Amino acid sequence: MVQVISAQNISLYYLKEKFNLHLAVDENFFNEWFENLPNISDPERQQLDRVKTNYFSLIERHAVSEELVKMVVLSPLLDLASFYRPPFYVETEESIEIRQEDEGEVVKGRIDVLVLKHQFWLLVIESKSTVFSLYTAIPQALAYMLSNPYPENLVFGLVTNGSEFIFLKLLKQDIPQYALSEQFTLLKRENELYKVLGILKNIGQVLS
Image 1 (cartoon, one colour):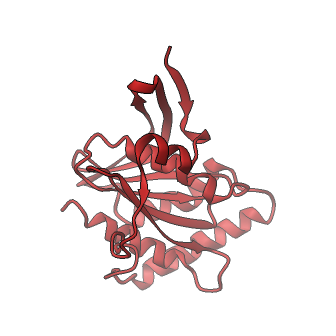
Image 2 (image 1 turned 90 degrees about the vertical axis):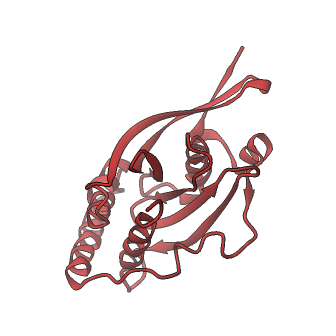
């Protein structure tokens, strides 16, 4: 009998043991988040300042739900990164599963937001409510990234709870490897959404 495991309940240890997933040791494995970032224009900065202001206006009253995080923070970022226009397109609530036939296990879940370039997976996004730590979302996002139907291609990830952001990169091939970016936060005086948008634009240049 096949045991179904929810992606939101798995750990990094599980992914290492079951899928041989390893943290990359090469510092240049994931340089897309800090090298050759594009400039952010003044109009883009103004829009990102508005996003930050809107977010803090909401959080003053109550915790921001996952759906509000998508509406208020994530959607404007995807728009400014041009991910709503060709050659990109966006899917939501994409069902995935990863099978371990020899052990009778299957990991299932739904990707919050999937950005594709042409027909290839480019960016897997997992959003959470503000009450969740990002580190609980990392194994879930990596599980989704492992389900990429094009294992020869790298795939990126982003986990966010509205105020914090961490990017991920995964390459499957023989030994699956992943790496994380630094954590970006809206709690700093400088608006780190500028950096987040720069990284999204940089990722958009992959699979050209």
